[in-house]
Image 1 (cartoon, rainbow, N blue to C red):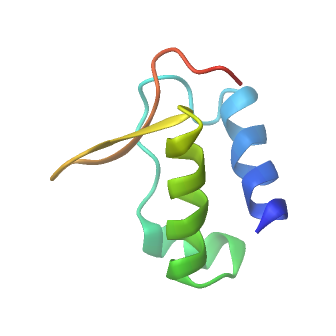
Image 2 (cartoon, rainbow, N blue to C red; image 1 turned 45 degrees about the horizontal axis):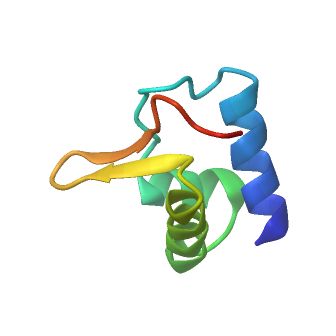
Length: 69
């Protein structure tokens, strides 16, 4: 899962996923990274815990407007 976290953080840092942008669905991320949706869920939960991502019920997961990474 560390490689997945690194890949997501890299895309956040390089502006692929800028602050305020919505991440692709868990299904799309699982297909892109060739991992299970549960692995995506764990990675997203980790990044949410770090304040990098925020969840908006009924809308999805977004890059925090001001994140520490």
